[in-house]
Length: 391
Image 1 (cartoon, rainbow, N blue to C red):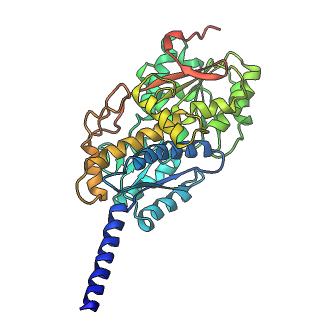
Image 2: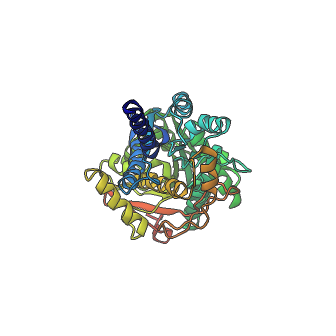
Image 3: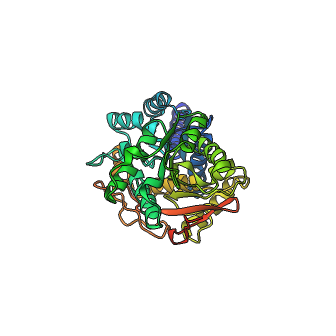
C-alpha cells in the first residue's frame, strides 16, 4: 500500500512537471542579421526593438502563459551565412517564424529557404522586390512598403521641387539592394517622361566596404554636375561618401532610402550639416503617436541606456504585429496556423495613425511613408514643401 502511494505521488510529480514545462515552453522566433561588422548597428537595432516588445509581453504574462524568445544569429550581412542561419533556425531550433531579417542581398537566399521549408519570413528590413513577388508568397509577410514606393516618392518630390531629371545622379551598393533602388528610380523617371536614365551618372561601391573614393571621383567628374544624388547604400559608406563630397560640393542634396537608417547615419556624419534627406517607413522617434510613445517607454524599461532610433522602432512594430497574431490563436502555436493568424489581421490599429492590413493578396501591410531631413546635426520630420534646391 505504501509503495503504491509512493508511486502515485511520483507519477503526480512527473505529470505536474510535464504540465509546468508545457505551460512555460518558449515560443521561439528566429532572426538572422548583421550583429557584428560594418552594418552591425542595423542588426543590433532591429534586435533591440524586437526584444524590447517581447520583454514587455513576457513581463505581462507572455502569450497565454508562454514566454516568447528571440534567437538572433549573426550573418555579417553576407548571403551565404544568412542561408546557413536560416536553415539552422528552422531545422535545429524549430522556430515558429523568422522575424526582422536585415538586407536585400541576404533576402535573395533566405526567401527561397522560407518557401521551401514553409516557415514565415516576417517583417524583413528591406524594400527589395525579392520579398514582394506577384502574386505574393504565402510565406513572405512584409510590414514595410517596398523601395519602389519609397523611390517614387523621392523622385516625385525632387522633380516637383524644380530639379531637372538630368541633374540627378546615383550612388548605390553594387548588389541586389543597389540594383533595386536604381531600377525603382528608372521606373519612376520613366513614369515622369524621362527615358535617358542610362545616361545619368551612376557611382558604385562594394558591399561591406568603405571603398567610396572612386564613387566620389565619378560624381566630381560628371559631365553634367548633379544637383541631387539618389542613394541606395548602407550607413557607414554613405556617410563617408557624403562627408567627402560635401567638402567640394556643399550644394549637393543627398537623398536616401530607408535602409540607410537616419539615426545611425546621423551618428556617422561627424556633425556636418549637408542637405541629407531620408525616406522612412516608420515615423520619427519623437512623433506624437500612441505607438511611438509606447515604444519609447518600452525601450526605456528594457534598457534605459539605449537611445531610440527608427530601426529599433521598426523592430518593435514587427514584433508587435507578430504578437497580435499569436494572441488570436487557439491551441498549438504551429507555423502554418501562425501564418493564417497573421493574414487575419485586418485593419489592425497599433497607434501609427494608419491601420495595417496583412491581406494575403497584398505585398505589404503598411503603405505609410515619412520624410526626415538633417538639420543642425540631427534628423527631423520634413515636408517637400520646405525643400529649396536653388541654393
